[in-house]
Image (spheres, rainbow, N blue to C red):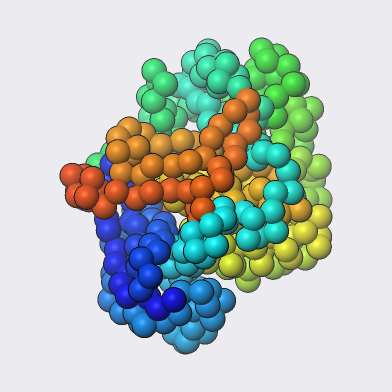
Length: 403
Ligand code: CS2
Ligand code: MG
């Protein structure tokens, strides 16, 4: 099954997505997600200039060989751009394999190990009352797990707080990133109050999650974890900058609050110590940023040996193709924990037609052959690239702070 064409399409139906399309001699076509938020054009160039030309003529069935060819063969290993590009090709090849076999990808991965995939959504607010209203909306939609974020009084802008009215958070368009402000002391006062508020209002029958976005020092994170133990968070996410794996030893020594990390990781090497030393409870690597289905399964297999569960990143800046691929992996692995599901903004459905479904807090990838996502290349043409950056985070004294 020779590959006859591989190309990249950048479109912005709601937000920017980079999509790889791989065609084979017998007409089976696969799609992969190559979106790297705020760095979209780098991955598109890496693919179009370096990887796609090398795909033509190769056997699309040899997924592992193609993965190794691009990973080991390039000499330069790892890194978000490289690994997102390899991931997109890997995802598209699994799509092709499923379509050729007439099976959904999860069947090729060993079949369903559960009936559905528990997902968590995002609730946020400028005030606790606004957060409460948004939390209730998500409960009404059937979610069994909800992430809570609230603005910090005294700070002009806080990342991830949606403007309200059922909308999701979205960075502003433009060629220069917006700048947010940050003050750790204020945050450390507010965060426990926020989780306490949610438990008082809604009780303990829903899983409660919170994302720190890498903004604390290890000892501050230890203090936060201890302060919120009584509110039984499902997890505290990204408490400290994720590349410092040994920092988690210090956090662990101060709290039993479960820890999740990994949305910025792109290889098994980034989380090896975190997993093998049992420093985290959930590994959040995503299928599109951590080398595709092939490499993500390797990470989750290592995690399974150490009692660490999956909790994949699933923000709206990962395309519906990544969401579908994640659901196939989630359904089939033994150590699934939870899946993030932020949903996608209109008009994403005009370009990506999905067969996954949500019901009563659980998702299922559907039973269409392959990933179950159709990408309408023609429709994508109506939504040109819209430059957008994640905000920069500065302390009140003007210094750049961690993300
Ligand atoms: C967040 C994301 O979903 C999450 O947990 O941390 O909003 C993240 O900041 C973006 O996906 C980055 O692209
Ligand atoms: Mg996060």
